[in-house]
Amino acid sequence: MKTKKELKNKYKQMKFPMGVFQIRNLSNDKVLIDNSTDMVSKWNRHQMELKFGSHKNQDLQKDWNNTGTDNFVFEVLSELKPDEKIISYPKELKSLQERVIEEINIEKELRY
Figure (spheres, rainbow, N blue to C red):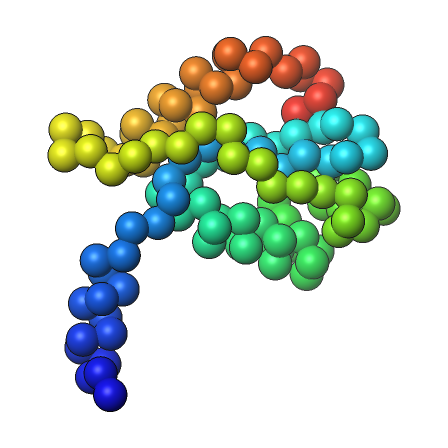
């Protein structure tokens, strides 16, 4: 059996998918575009906040409450691969998010 220290070290060495994603409402096509160095954890956090009614985006929360969980999907828009040249992943992801928003050109009315 592995020690607590070994498990911590193993966790620290794990690579999580980084990138830009959207939470899309299937009933009205509105989207929330976000980024993270760990997209799976961030999606889980969004889901938990929405389930508990404590999401910071009130419009998204309202739609979630009215239409239900099944009307929302998580979609990866762009993934960022680990690179030794990247100094700050959060800054790089923010920049990537801005480029993705510009490229897909979603109307403001369709954004949360």
